[in-house]
Length: 127
Image 1 (cartoon, rainbow, N blue to C red):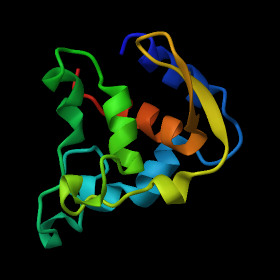
Image 2: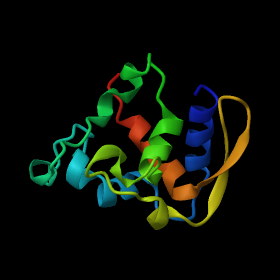
Image 3: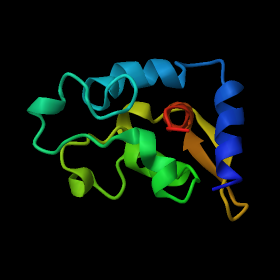
């Protein structure tokens, strides 16, 4: 994850085209996860499964933000039923891709919007 996270931040910062991660989060995520990622959005009480508190993802992974896992979750892998009410955003965010370097050093293409959104979720982490 150490190589992936800086790559995500760099790509998101250098990606002037398309909406930024904060704007995407406000539009597609805050209703359930809340503006700070606490899982307390206005739609949360109506959901059959409580939304995840996104603020502790890095802490839960030994202090490393799990960027690849977050990107996969946003996209919709491993399938619609994986997180209850969490929608698959892959089809919505498909489009222009950017190169992302994985922890293994591989360069993969990822949708620009998912990279930007993942970088924003990283900013919500509790210090």
